[in-house]
Amino acid sequence: MKDLFPGHFKESEGKLREVWDTSLFVFDANILLNLYRYSDTTRKEFLRILDKIKDRVWIPHRAAEEYLNNRLSVIDQQERSYDETKKSIQSLRSDLENARQHPFVSNRTMSKVSKVFDELCEELDKNRSVHTNRISNDEIKSSVSAIFENRVGQPYDKERLVELIAEGEERYKQKVPPGFKDGAKSGDSDIFTEKCRKYGDLIVWTQVIDQAITSGKGIVLVTDDKKEDWWEKFKGKTVGPRPELVKEFKDRANNTFHMYQADRFLELARENLDEQVSDEIVEEIREVRRRDKMAQKRMREMEYLKRRKSEMSHLFQELERSKSRMMAYEEERHMLQQRMQELESVRSDMRHHQENLLREGVDNPEFEPFMDHYTALSEEYSRVRKNLENSSMKYKEMQIHMMELEKEVAHRMKVIEQENSADS
Image 1 (tube, rainbow, N blue to C red):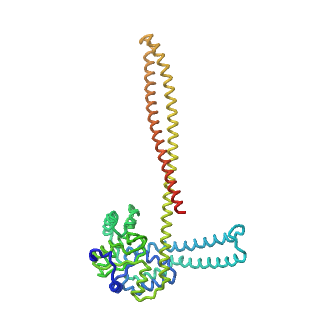
Image 2 (image 1 turned 120 degrees about the horizontal axis):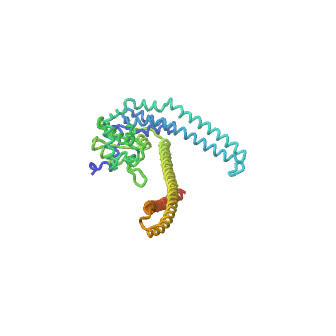
């Protein structure tokens, strides 16, 4: 059974130690990017572990490319986190300094607090400047570059990437990991690099397998990707890598595959590499991941609210347009009804005159011109009547459309109210 379903069975302790002694350690881009989010102590410890095993580390070309392309964005995020923290401190200071409203704080206590606030802001500015300097003088990038010197995979040519995009489309449809959670990303851009972005996880995965085949070594993949197209999860807990990934790796590379997040990697490094890694460092890495998870959740919520707002805006705009069209149809119907009444009155008078002309005889010279005029009025009456019927039909259709729009607006407002209530 284990041979057929390798992803559902864990390695023995002895086998696991052998894995750590012989396997290739592969790092995803998010592991390197998180180095910018760690404290100096944790980052130095992590880099020290990497340096110790640097003869067996490797990074896929795609992952290295993503690290370098996203490095400045992460630095900017860290800078903004300092700015936001300072704003929170200034807001709290302002609330406490306002002696006319609660909460009240004595002048003596406020003097002490203000001194602490000043020290906090000064230290935050100092630490923020460290991240700012990394834009042009990045010691983290230099350390990463030294560790992974000659340990980065070669890029795929365009022909191979086109093949992977086609393969990825089919895999994503069938929910074959990894990467299908990125299926919502747009891949319709004319820019080829943008098309590849949607299939970035699959490209990384394929490069990992190719490297395992080339090197003949098992792989320990270290990634902080949390999506369920990489991990098997049960009741909110991560069980391990997706069994499909383990099986595909074994089928194609005929070797062992293990996958860990950064904190678990350090815990196992402590056990299998005889390294001293403090619990505080492991906990900090977990906290960074938790904060990142919350930040992503907030981002998704903001995107959701933005879509909600856009949808409601479009609905209200459509309501206004529909009201305008209804008013136009109402005005048109009124004008057509007036014209029909005018034509009917004229035709009625002409019918009486026609009876008088017929009594006088068809030889009356007024008869033929009179009948031509009567026929023209009758034709206009028919046209006006047909237009009125069409306008009335459109008016009724617009009424139904308005009712549907108002019903949809009421439904969405109720959903938003329920969501707000649930959030509370």
